Length: 189
Image 1: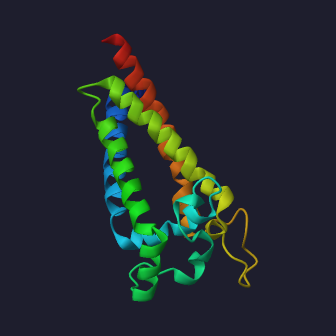
Image 2 (image 1 turned 120 degrees about the horizontal axis):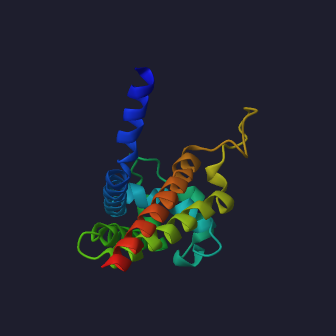
């Protein structure tokens, strides 16, 4: 009886792959559009400054990448002089452009029912974006717990910023699945 119940449960679960891929695609779209939209909020733009400023590939996008530490606002905090520095640094212009790019990637993935080929392009772009985001784990000191007295600091102890970044490994894996699914659907049309 138990074996039959387990077999029936596994048989049912084995049929969930298409539903799971669709759910995965919807989740990616929601996260991308939401996070992309947040890039238009000043607090979010302020928060990504250490990532961009420390990236050897991206730091040129800011006017003063080496000066950010003394101009950071905590989430929910407003220091007008820091905001003005971020305006001068190009923080908000860059963040808005990034937000548009992230939203567009989400919308490309959402086009799966209309054009799986275009959706595949969105998934490929998400893979590239996730790889870039994960590179910040190597380039940004703020992703590791600082040495402030506790014995747990540095590698492998991720700060809140690091814990948020490492989740992009899941985004990358999900994008590989949706890329493969979209490519198969495009080839079958």
